Image (tube, rainbow, N blue to C red; front, side):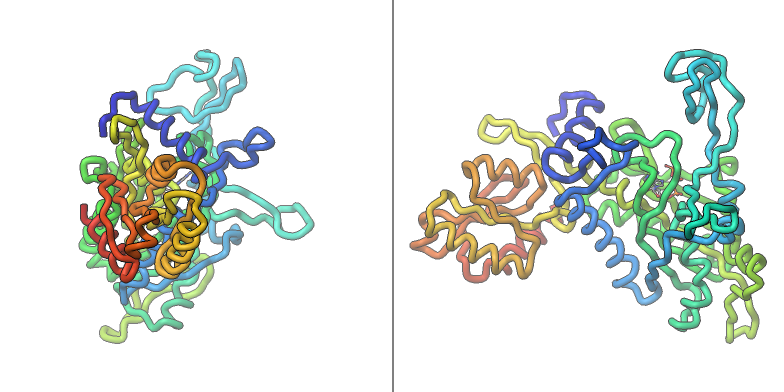
Length: 442
Ligand code: ATP
């Protein structure tokens, strides 16, 4: 990347591209937006869905030892009382006595960020869970919470899943879904929002194998980001100190990405021990141990949890892919997304608005659509259409020109190099598949 602008300006460019090209829109924009919430547009939802599908494919479909569930978002307060979230899932909050601003005291902050007053309250614990009421009566017996993590759905269904799927540790239960946290300082676009999507795996193991599986999952998850195009130089692993560990964790390491504002967590891998199963077992009176027929004894498995954020990783993939270069003395913006992530794998473009070219191009796009997410565009000049596809990360453009009528061939343009090759329409799906595979291994 010929990056001669500041990190701040670079981030601004990525955010602008997200809006301009339909990846992410501010929520309730026509009313001036709503408190750091965002809506995913047509290309954003495609990218996000690709991320989630690739995660599910790697974690569930391609493994014999992991199954999935989809638990409710609205959940019983008993779950959160038992998991420790009601008591412990808090952030410190400071009030400015001068201007009444409320903020999270980052390390070393002694002044109000709004008015610079030093007349501040002591930090108070603020619970991050969203509370609501189920049914028409708003009283304490009808309180429910929006889940702040998907993990508890796996713990409270532990016996249901073990029994129905006849599983034996080591095995995992995976889930992708929305979580909600009343973050005090949401920000950095979709990095920290109050409503977000998580991709979590709870991997249940015999306690004496926990350390080994912790290392295994840390390595696997690191490799996943690299396999989807994030350079290793922009990733690091950070082990938590004892003081930093969550109330349920014996060991945690974060996979961090170098965001324009510094290192930030993409995913946490934690050894949650048997904390959750034991606590739910005690509180519910239900047996949540695993009965091992080989030893004729029961035990609480330990849990290794890789917990990733879908939206946060989308942000990292976009930042890692954003590039600007010069092609034929013209500046262009290009998203060098892995073909696996790209919203469209291919775009079909007739060279001009000639009826015959349009007909051929539409036929080609219809047949390609059976295999790939495929865009079709016959508006503006061909140069501008290439620029648009570069900006949204489409790895291949198929162009139909006047010669196509004679030779039944088209050109395939490579997003990254802009090189073009001429190939027959017959066998185009296979040719494109080969191209996409090559691009994946760049
Ligand atoms: P942070 O320290 O950034 O608040 P966390 O350690 O509380 O994150 P976890 O509880 O480990 O996060 O959640 C797992 C993953 O869920 C995170 O690595 C992140 O990718 C995602 N995540 C957590 N909170 C948010 C949020 N407010 N907005 C977007 N993604 C989030």
